[in-house]
Figure 1: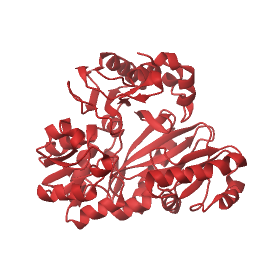
Figure 2: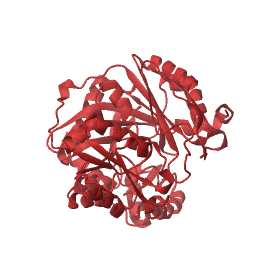
Figure 3: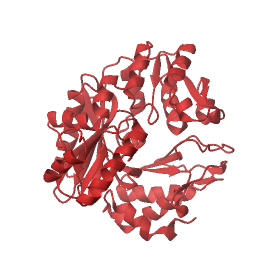
Amino acid sequence: MLKKLLIANRGEIAVRVIRAAQDLGIATVAVYSAADAEALHVQLADEAVNIGPPAAKKSYLNIEAIIAAALEKGCDSMHPAYGFLAENAGFSDAVTAAGLTFVGPSGDAIRLMGDKVSARTAAAAAGVPVVPGSTGRVDGIEAGRHVLEATGFPVMIKAAAGGGGRGIRIANSLAEFEQAFPQAQAEALAAFGDGGLYMEKVIGKARHIEVQVLADGQQAIHCYERECSLQRRRQKVWEEAPSRALSTSLREELCASAVALAKAVGYSGAGTVEYLYDDEADRFYFIEMNTRIQVEHPVTEAITGIDLVAEMLRIAGGEPLRIAQEDVTVTGHAIEVRLNAEDPARDFAPFPGTIGDLRIPGGPGVRFDSMLYNGYQVPPFYDSLLAKLIVHAETREAAIMRLTRALRELEIGGVKTTKPLFLALAADPSVRAGDVHTRWLEGWLQDNATALAG
């Protein structure tokens, strides 16, 4: 077992990892920027190290400073959580080179699956269906025109090194394609330092379904699927498990394909294989693999009873995968909503401030993952995610009722949050019926702007 862990992150996920490690008797070290000196993860860790000024590139993205902090404090391991350096192959390599254990996959695995083109190739080789599109990177508009002969319109232009919805454009005509291609290239280069692009056919009214896997480099299992179809600007806002859209046979096929891919690439740790599901054709297609713990991992924990972060730590500590596939069962239904410091009534403008009058919901089946406390100053430098509200109940209908009750209980004073969005969505007939797709929320927001004030 690991002895002393540095958490190379901040916010609610740093708190989550610290708690999991301490439950296992692992000492914890937090890192923080000058803006986070009073943050909850700093208060909860056994030790903490200031690694730089507020700007992320000078603190949470500073590999040299993070590794130096780990060595200074005598750590034997590093957990990257999600965001920042979590899917940076060079970071994984540097941690290992420093004699530390990286809690996650190898740099080679991150490199393979982090590049969307090589990931598509690996998935196809493992027998996993992929969205029709380019077989490799598309080197310029002329090469893209040849791909269009196979995909037709609409087509999606995507960053090869992408993530978080950046470096993506949809074109519905040749003129749009020729305009969108250099735009996507420029955005990809600015966001990821890599302007490489590839192309995929757009699947109309697709659902976003992903499979949670756990692996130890040899063996792999799945922990069933999550549905993340409610998205704004390709960012997930509401996640749930299991998906109501899948038949039993298709669920088995989908989950088996994720396990096959994890085994094929020698994956280690917790990872998520993401798919688009075409309702009309009843087919699924691989889109990417996230080589880290996901923001929405708590819904899987709720329905399976498996502590995914603890299992990551056990695997990184040298234990073989201790859960057999037949031991993973699903109980009930879980929903997670992301509470951001944003004003839904003003096009989700960021809203940093000082937290006051905080009231956290409770009761059976309610979980609240956050870094909040009364008097906490929400900094303007980072992602606006404040907390995740997770509910679990016997049925999906009961989970939505429980979510509504918990949202009404919740108070986060001092800032605007996305709470009004989720109260409105929980009452919407289409959401209650599960009749949504990845572009549904964009249309709903245009028609329901007045419902988001409050």
